[in-house]
Length: 133
Image (cartoon, rainbow, N blue to C red; front, side, top):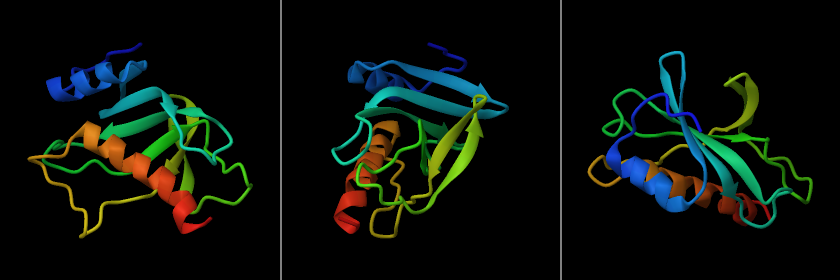
């Protein structure tokens, strides 16, 4: 697994605690974390995927945003997943989920980090079936 940059201690501890493989890669000047074997909730055509998160400049004071999946996620019922687009990363085509924090759930740099963003993404994945059964 590639470790092309050093993560914050809390982020590395979180990733190691998952027991799943992960990578820290550079794409140009951008820093990305790849979480392999990320488990998906029921309803998707696959049980696991790789999720990528960009650690944007200014993180952790600046909020993490969106998530990227490889292979692209699909609903087992064939319904289209809205607000997704293709994104090239690491010489592969990822599926970008354009989901963002809201005023009701803003980023709090004293509490939020990679672990809370991953949990937030997990909520998006479950919400896909609550919002559009």
